[in-house]
Length: 384
Image 1: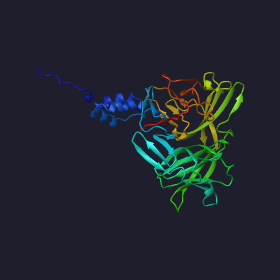
Image 2: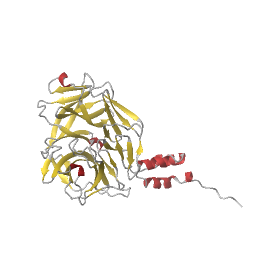
Image 3: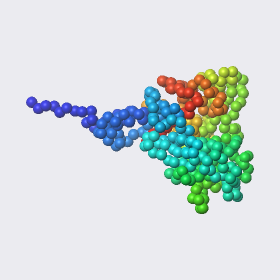
Image 4: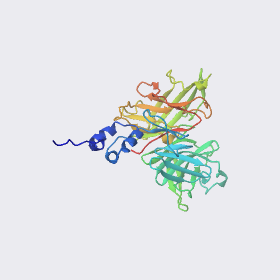
C-alpha cells in the first residue's frame, strides 16, 4: 500500500500565502510570516499587498506595530528628533542624519552649524550663522534635496540642503525679515514644495534653485498661492472653562493638497485632565487647496478607504489605504498632545485617539497605548 505524502506548512501554494498575508495589516506580522522559512519569505516578496499600517515610534526606543501590538524595542531608534515617512531624523551637536530602520540605510545631512543665511540681493549674512540654529520638520523631497524649517529667533524659515556632511543648509531671508512669513508646515505636492505661514495661514509655493558657484540648493522664491484664515498656528484662547489650541497640518492625498486644522479644548482649571474630546468640543476641519480659485475649500470626507495618521513632526503625517484591512476609513488618527504649547502638559501620559469624519466623534483604540509626554512620538511608515 502506497504511503501518503506528508505535506509541510512550507508547501502551501503562493496564492494561498498571499491571501494570508493580505489579512495581516501589521508590519511585524508580515515580517514574522516571512521569517518562518525560505518558501514563505519568497511568497512574501512576490505577493502584491496593500500598504501595512504604520509603526508608532517613541523616542525611548519603544515601538508598537498597529493594530494592537505589544511594545517591542527597535535598536538604534532612541533619541530621534523627527520623522519623515520611513526615515527617522537624528540631530546632535556636530551631526545630523536620517536613518531608515527597515533597510538600515543612512542619509547624512549637514550639521546644524553649517548654515548659510542670505538676504534677498545679498550674498551671505555671517551674523545669522548660529551654531544653536534649530532645524525641524525635515522633509526628504528627492534623493538630492532635503528641506526643513529653521528657527531664527521668533521667525521660522525654510532651509534646504543636499545630502552629505560637507554640504550646507541654505536659508533665505527676504527684505521684510523678521516680519516676513514665518512657516509652520511644509509638504511636497506634485513634486513641488509648499509651506504654510502660521502667522496668517497663507499657502506659499517654494521655488528651489542651484547656486552655480557652490552647487548647493537655495530658496529662490516663495510665492503666495492661497490666502489663509489669518489665525496663528498655535493660539491660546480662553473660552469659559477651557483653553483652546489651534494647530495646522499640511498633507498630500490623491493628487490634492489638504490643510487639516485641529481645535483642541483643554480644561482651564486642570489642564492635566487631557484633551476635552469626550464632550464634542474639540474637532478637526479639513480644507483642500483650490489653486485655480486661490482659496481653501472645506471638505467633509477624506474617503471611506483612507485613514490619515497625523504627527506633530509634520512630514511624518500620511494617508494609508485601509480598504483591504477590515478597518473603517474616513478617520484621523492623531496624538492627543498635538497643538499644545510646549511644556503645558508635561505630566501624566500621552496617547493617541481617532476622529471619525462621518459623525465628528472621538474614540480611543483598544488596547490603549500611552507614554511619557516628555518623549517624542511619531508614525513610522514601512516600505510598501
